[in-house]
Amino acid sequence: MESIWKRETELGERSAIREDYRADAVVVGAGMAGVLTAYKLQKAGLSVIVLEAERVGSGQTQNTTAKITAQHNLIYDRLIRQIGRDLAGQYARANQKAIAEFEALIRTQKIDCDFRRLPAYLYTNLRDKTDLVQEAKSAKSLGLDASFVTESSLPISIGGAVRFENQAQFQPLKFLKALADELTIFEKSRVYKVEGGRVYTAHGRVDAKAVVLACHFPFVNRPGYYFLRMHQSRSYVVALENAAELDGMYLGLEGLSFRNYGSYLLLGGGGHRTGEHPDKSSYDRLERAARWLWPDARVVAKWSAQDCMTMDGIPYIGRFSNGMPQLYVVTGFNKWGMTSSMVAAQILTEQVLGWAHPLAEVFSPQRFHTRASAANLLKDGIEAVRGLGLKKLTVPEGNYADLKSGEARVVDYDGVRAGVYRDEGNETHVVSVTCPHLGCVLSWNGDERSWDCPCHGSRFDYKGALLSGPALEGLHQEAQTVQ
Image 1 (cartoon, rainbow, N blue to C red):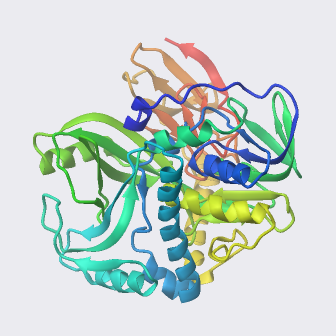
Image 2: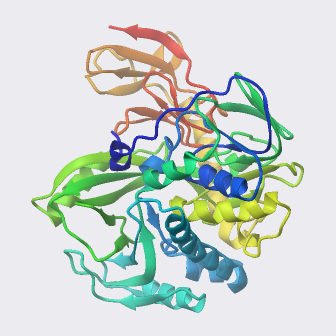
Image 3: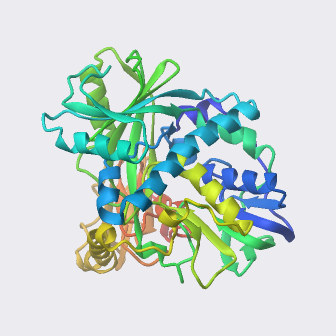
């Protein structure tokens, strides 16, 4: 499964790092946040090296729906109540400014990436529109061009919507390629350790004055303890032909997302916490919704994404911790990675240069907003306990002799708790279901044929290969493939 962005964009391959280097800054991760940050640092006159574990844009950037918007679900009324009007205003201005920055960069660099300005809607199917009316008032009070409306171009009646004017969408990999081609990037160069300004890979290291972790989920566990301050969430997308041309981008409080791209309509939804999989396929639910809305529509592609979710719904952008002055971090985009990536690039560039960014306070990784964070901290703590301990107490589900093609199960394999998957060729793959990050018990994701960690979101394919972190290595194979 691959996104339509990936299908139509050839990013090329770059060599892995093979020797030691020095630079003013090293950026870990070549997704949208890492490339934007490296690009801005380089434009500011710094020498920059980017280290990517796989390929440029191969993580969440290639799987985004690519909405560039300050409309981030029901957030502004909540932020005003929980962290105050001043900080809520910083968040609003930073994200709206990011849209203009994308447009300016695309125009000045003449990047052909299907950038388009259009409104973004947050809508509900229900009659109760109280929350949306209040959200529109709160967003407008913070300077955003938002209003409450009752009409839409969706093929269903709505209870109401908040309309944000002058938002945007684009083709993310076309944009990323244009910037990446101007940078020094080493691919297949996974960073496994950071010590001060020294960054280590298996075949070379980089010494730098500043290190930026833009690798989705920080793999440095201490002292930042980001694994205690975030969880990861999955979401799903299908691209449709013969659907509809909408007047803007749409997000429903009930979970469905829409945007057009060329002749396609992207329908998203089916989200769930990583490692907690619904009984029915998320793709099947989206396809049923598509047939209901547009009976003649046809699915031409489908893919999924994974997002880091912070306790208060605000990204962590800034110094990694007070005790590590050379290390910076950007993570926790809460499903709004495009706009947040630009916000991060602007803030981190000025901080690395030794300047104070006027909108940085609300994103500080050292913050703790009690009212916004306490409930989610408790919930994430409970999930970590379940993943670390309670699941280990459950009895595995018998043997694997009766597994059908495409099925997986946790079993007792020669006295060891193991995950077993039978592929289409009737081969059975047996791997450990203990996450190598911090020891949580993995769960099977049938939609993606992967073993996922419910604690911190690491993912592995059915053969045990690492798909995404914060884990740094794959799963132990309890056995080679067996018949």
